[in-house]
Amino acid sequence: MADIVQLENVRKYFPGVKALDGVSMTIRSGEVHALIGENGAGKSTLVKILTGIHDPTSGTILVDGEPASFRTPHDSQAAGITAIHQEASMFPNLTITENIFMGHHLRNRFGLLDWKTMEARTRELCERLSLAISPDTLVRDLSVAQRHQIEIIKALSIDARVIIMDEPTASLSLKEIQELYELVRTLREQGTAIVFISHKFEEIFEVADTYTVLRDGKYVGNGSVSDVTTDDLVRKMAGAALDRLFPERTPSIGEVALSVQGLTQAGVFEDVSFELRNGEILGFFGLIGAGRSELMQSIFGVRSRDAGSVTVAGERLDPLNPRKSMAQGLAFVPEDRQEQGVILDMSIIENTTLSSLRAVSRFGFPQKHTERSVTEGLAKRFSLRAARLEQRVAALSGGNQQKVVLSKWLATQPRILILDEPTRGIDVATKAAVHSFVGELADQGYAIILVSSELHEVLGMSDRILVMREGRLVAGFDSEDASAERVLATAIGAAAVEQGA
Ligand SMILES: Nc1ncnc2c1ncn2[C@@H]1O[C@H](COP(=O)(O)OP(=O)(O)OP(=O)(O)O)[C@@H](O)[C@H]1O
Ligand SMILES: [Mg+2]
Image 1: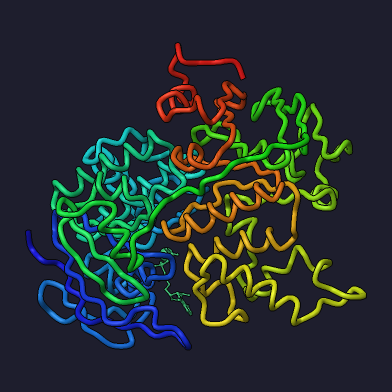
Image 2: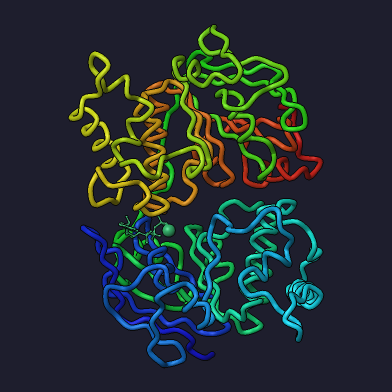
């Protein structure tokens, strides 16, 4: 396997932060290379250097053994390197072919745009990867997973030899994830080099051949995935072993805190009824698209409903009135941090105290030192990696932005907490911190709903688990009777094991 790209002793300093501090890595053709490390370790920064978005402070990049310098994304594309980002950057109202050839249209010998050839080429690439999508489909009609596939095709259309995927499976369903793995394997067989960034170990062991670990911007080690265990990798990433993933609790379940009756939004979720008690962690499991997030949005009041009621402490919550929900002690940590979670242009302190300004203000004026101490406490709790608390959230790594979202809602000191995928994109060590915090909150009497697509998380954390499928509650399990097989089977809809909710 030929070396395509070699990084030698690469550094990238931002004011106050050594995002990369002497990293070396070799990317070879026909190899899937996992890039792993905790939140803020420098993974995305390394990708940005490889794709010409950031200039390294120092260090060498060799392509095919020759020194290279990527001043713009165009330079690195010309060298055959491209990245597929988490938020797809395509034009929804254009077709697949139009998107793929955007910026490098093919022309015929008269200099006119040659759509026929471009379409044929798109079809050929789809076939090469065994994808059954028609090239004239509008991108807005594609699922998130299909958009990812098109991004991969786009990469191939410019003859990419290195394709970098930054947490590609975060918003894909189980089936779509399997399809992505297939695609990655096909690309590998065809000689493409893949750099794969993920916080999920199952996935690293499933697809990757080699790994490189970063810690605090420093290169810690590399090797063959077949020579290591999950524990080895965790130890390399965190610098220490992790004793246990989920907190031990002896739950004491109290009064009903939240009651949902017959909640319906036509075509999205149907006749959902359940009760949540003080001191309880109620897990909601289901496949992506089962309607869990939409249900939670409606309960909190940021999505409408057609029928049903939500009651907190004897008081009915109005539809579409999140203010009233918050006044009743409800907090909602949404799954999409970029859209609903944080304001990227504001500082960590501003974001953290945004929703709780009343709690930290006296006579209506926010108190600077209180804001700071509230934020400091939460930042410490979640080992937030930031140069200063006054820093803009936009400059934080993906996982650290997620921690700010969590802090912001916990700062409102809610009684009922709805967490939608709270640990997505968060590294293992911090995951454990979030879990133990959630466990403590429940022990203090908070009522908690935990929506997660990670089965282990739901099983490890919940006192009770409700399973949703196609907009309906299809089963309920006490934590003692919940096994991975049974919960997953009901979520997928495998018959026989179903129980009444
Ligand atoms: N534009 C920037 N300005 C200042 N600091 C930055 C900037 N971009 C990244 N950083 C800092 O560099 C460090 C590395 O961030 P990076 O995004 O590479 O982490 P990551 O490994 O991708 O983490 P995650 O798993 O959370 O996505 C972090 O401390 C981050 O705050
Ligand atoms: Mg990142």
